[in-house]
Image 1 (spheres, rainbow, N blue to C red):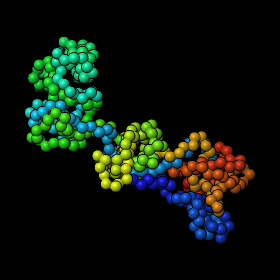
Image 2 (cartoon, rainbow, N blue to C red):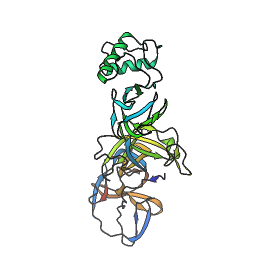
Image 3 (cartoon, rainbow, N blue to C red):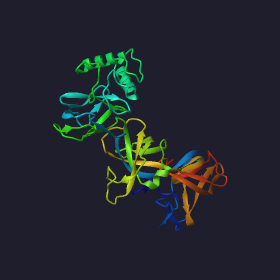
Image 4 (cartoon, rainbow, N blue to C red):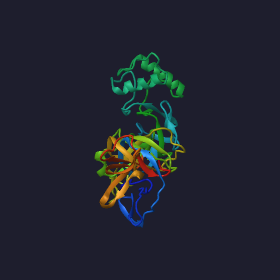
Length: 365
């Protein structure tokens, strides 16, 4: 994916005054392009303060709305698939993920996959602890002590759950009656057709978490400077609503664009980055297009002025016009980072300090 340098969200003209016949300049792209046009001798001006702020320079990427995480539901036992959840449905702990031989396969929360049946004869293990924690969370084992050991209280908690779920009440959980996943799953697809025969380790469904995120595919060159916890800015699909966000996950491997299994043919490899956005996303639509601005460089507590306060001079130089009780004076400045979201530029110059007033085009202050 080609990265776009954000430049300016809007092409911003630098305010210029001077004698007729001198060249005007625009801040656009490289921020110092001669227009070759005469500059009016009179320009209406306003004023803005020199402030001390954090100034960030950002790279712009295309992204889309989606959901975090990716899960594949694996069948732990054989049988005929007789039912599954519709795409878009969210399945929580204690609910049926799909049906085999007319019987529900129930979701329980846990990180260890199901690999054996549960009974009083089983050895201790982390999977036992997971089952006990799930039963207790569902309200079927109020006195159950969560441990790696299958106790008599575990037996009775299973019986209560089975009775409530309409399952054969045995006090044991046969292989294939439950599936462990870390959390609720939002179904995104089916891997087999209804009526198909499934065997142990057969993928049945795919899904994500309920967590709404912005997903961006980054080229590998941008990964070294992108990490979990970094702040970003997101421009939502309506084209004007901005939201702060933070990176919550960065893929460990890059795959060719448009490929889900790394088997793309010659396309540029990218790595998926997931971003959580502050606040609600109005009119959330899966795969809706957004713009993401990821910080490439950040200078903290520096002097800054509105970008439109910069007056471009020949040879790539800049100045600002400081206004005080004594009138106005032209101050040459060294420009650092441009923050296109805040529309500020980092500046330094002789006698320039926080609180001073600088000229800007009328109406832009």
